[in-house]
Amino acid sequence: MVKIGNSWDEILKEDFESPAYLKLREFLKSEYSAHTIYPPMGDIFNALKYTDYYGVKAVILGQDPYHNPNQAHGLAFSVLPGNLPPPSLLNIYKELRDDLGLEIPQGSGYLLNWAKNGVLLLNASLTVRAPVANSHSNKGWEFLTDSIIRKLGRREQPMVFMLWGNNARAKRAYIDSSRHLILECAHPSPMSASYGFFGCRHFSKANAFLRSHGIAEIDWSL
Image 1 (tube, rainbow, N blue to C red):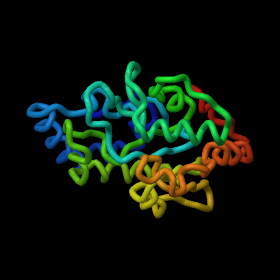
Image 2: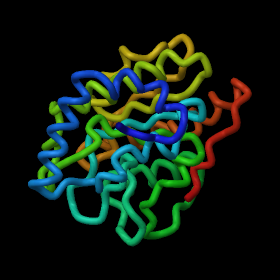
Image 3: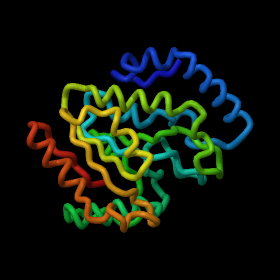
Image 4: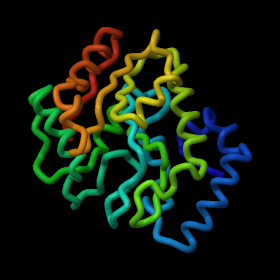
């Protein structure tokens, strides 16, 4: 049985007891026993552990964990301390600097402070087989992560959904746009950042929306 340790346990109770999740769990048991899988098993649900359902102020959606050693730890776009920020994260930092004038310490790629400040850093797939990107896509994770987005999308308290790239933007249908702010643009990957991610100003827009609803801004520093 999965134990998150906060309100997600009750909110996702039916999901974790469903045949779809039990099938996924058997697949993961086989994968972890036979292959190198990231992140470590104890870190799979870190995004939920660090950011309680009722504390979510913004959602940033990634695709799947990093598939190289010592990087993935359960938070989308984040890497463990001691690892250089990957290219997409460097582009996120560039936009953050241009938008808010915020400089991130050189070499820092650990986004735990964002998670603790209400940013749910959720990947569509929560595991990956090394060294193959997207190797656990369409294996059952989307059932759970789509359910998470739907439950957040129906939450009464407003939040911001930052949908970067086509995969994330496809989740728009799960979100009540009359209640929440949906921000969409290109993915921060070097292959697409110049097509709308740079200059999107999502960080300042998110904080302005939160302020307008009497919600404390997100501290985007690290």
